Image (spheres, helix red, strand yellow):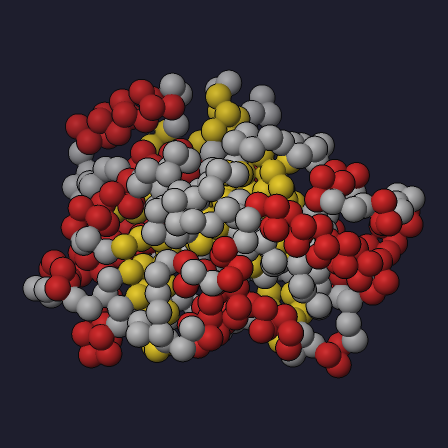
Length: 436
């Protein structure tokens, strides 16, 4: 274990309190946004001494970043080394500017994450994700692996044949990948006689989609992967804005928080901190960021915080799998649910190739759900089975429409994000394409 992983709860608490006070002094001096906010709200930052005092500060939202993007910048533009951008899947993209120190922090974060999964300098990481187009994550994974002194091969997303050729040619041992793409790799290998079970690949760092349920059991995608390929799966959660990632250890009981890099809260609609184990919106305060630090930033993602010591020996807080995005919550026929609930049901059916959910408002100003599904062999019997299963699981019945895979892919191409597109929100005047 690294020295930071051996900190006790008391040492973590003291460390975060010290770094919090340093952060508030920094943004009060350098951030036009926070300096103005503190003055407007008549906030005396000298009275914020511990992480419990964060509740006395207002939260920051994605809309704040969108409307006042460059007001968050704390350094002259001459000190910016890299400009990155959010994907814009939930509105206008946000530019996040990083200094040289911020890039080093990014590499350190992923180095910690990879180390926590058991990876070493002997590993060769295959990065099956976007590494261009202002994408912070691709750069972070690359630099983290480099800091670990591991090998890296940048294959990018897609192209199963090329991925397998590279795995066997380079002897890749770890992959950073979207979980649903692993299923496509397995299917391609089975169809083409590739001995994938005896490949050198042993570990997958899963991005963009959950592989676990909220009780830390493997979900449908995770189970289907493990059924055919006994590869180690590690969930990870990150966002461009917070410039930090939470990654599981080998025990798979939540994404570990790096306490020297981030303070995490789960809050209610009013921004009040919720008890450990209670579902709410993940809210983060970044530590050690020079360019665009954030104080109590509401991520829009719903999860719980776990405070019990982990079996791996670390006493850091952990976050559960993300249960859904706050903006994605659907109110359908008196039932509130997140798209992830429907995804889990659809993913469990091997006859379904792909799908898209569309949510719209009806004349009663409530939500309607339309599910477009591509299946191997459409039939009235299969439609009846899916209808019955969805109704039994959800207690309500969305409308299902069979479609060709080409039509599904066409609908998925309507988005501007970098991750699989499965959800279209038509409940506002504009169409919002939302990632899985």
